[in-house]
Image 1 (cartoon, rainbow, N blue to C red):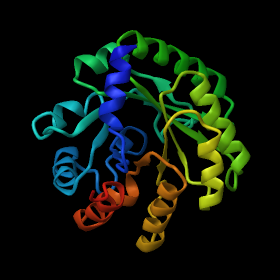
Image 2: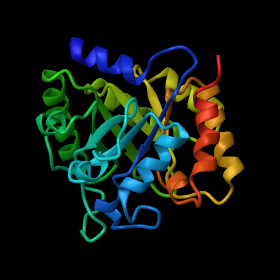
Image 3: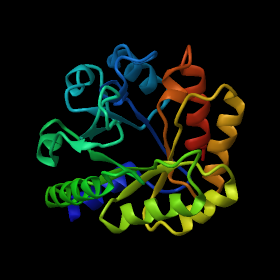
Image 4: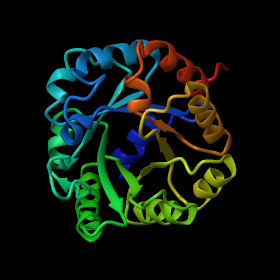
Amino acid sequence: MYGTTLRLQRIFPGGSRRLFSVPLDHSVSMGPIDGLEAVAPVVQELQASGVDLVVVTKGAVREVVPVLRPPTLLAVHVSASTALSPSPNYKTLVGTAEEAVALGADLLSVQVNFGTPEEGLMLRDLGVAVDQAHRLGLPLMCMSYVKKSPSPTLEELQHAARASADLGADIVKTSYPGTEEAFRSLVRTTPVPVLIGGGVRADDENAFVDAVRASIRAGGAGICIGRNLFQRRPLGPLARRLAELLHPAG
């Protein structure tokens, strides 16, 4: 487990610094959406703005490698489904920890959509991925989403996050529950670092930044936010604003 511990120390070096990570895996599930027509230029702009880690699919690594520069870290996401499927919420494993390590990954990423008919199959895949990753000393992040309408309750988010951690995830990404107090409760009941995701692009940029700020005050370990960042033009100003929050001077 030394490898897992060392890699987690690189991802979370301690002090007041929080993780600034950006998922760029959306093209499998959603196609070449606005802002993600090509991955490499986005990665270049994010690196220039202070991002710590990017999350890509294994095929996209070939686009990222020519532009990725230290100290930016790489996560490889190995869960997939498409919007073309009759069951788009059913994420299945399409890669292994061994492949991710061979591609240079610092972190393995999988997704579980709780509350769906296929939840049990995704939990099985999470267990498989955790075992693969930890045998190789690779930390694993679980993107833990609750698919309930109109929106999941705090208790449901807590359940999904805790289940992900208890099944072996080293990092949990989840939805922001709406208030600082609620997120503090979620962090308190999840025994691993918790990152917030951004979801659908918000119109109010200041409100979005305020939510990130509140998550930090509540004890969050950072962010893993995609569309709310890369779908803004230009993305640099907002990325630098977030970097200042997540990487405070001193």
